[in-house]
Length: 197
Image 1 (cartoon, rainbow, N blue to C red):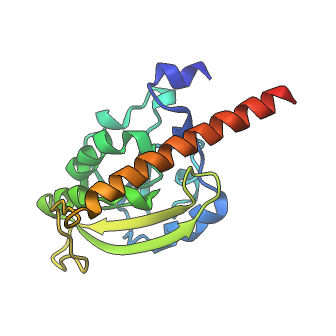
Image 2 (tube, rainbow, N blue to C red):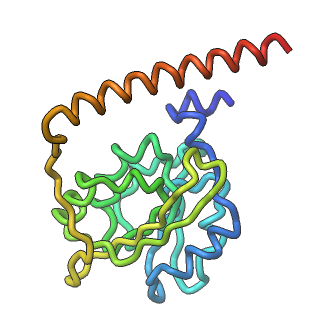
């Protein structure tokens, strides 16, 4: 897969969304007739091929020479982004979407920092759909729909980093270091055992 290296993608970024999932998510989008909708990371065009016929659709795919970061404007994005690129692509999503977007992401990618960016750009979360997709690195994913509307967030967030009181924080860090050391020893042990077979 030389094209992964050439496109500066990670191997885990090239995991396609199951058709059953796409058929469940697209109808959740509040598209209107003639809205411009972009499949920003088209891959095998599973989202693009199943958009409703009432919209004007387009796609980007870095492997095919159509870089999302070169795209200038659309009403909507509805797609599954490469998780390793979300940090750099998220600001561009907020810049080019005029009405909103729907993204299938890992639930841990919805950070308070992204919430603050959403609000600053005038977007609000209008729907979150939780789902399990085996093979997406982590099994819990969310489909998040954000719109540029005056409804406001129904979710609140706090961007402060809180610390545990007293010795709890120190004890937690020690436990985590011990856990990680054991975890990596167990992986190495399993790898050696598999190699012997």
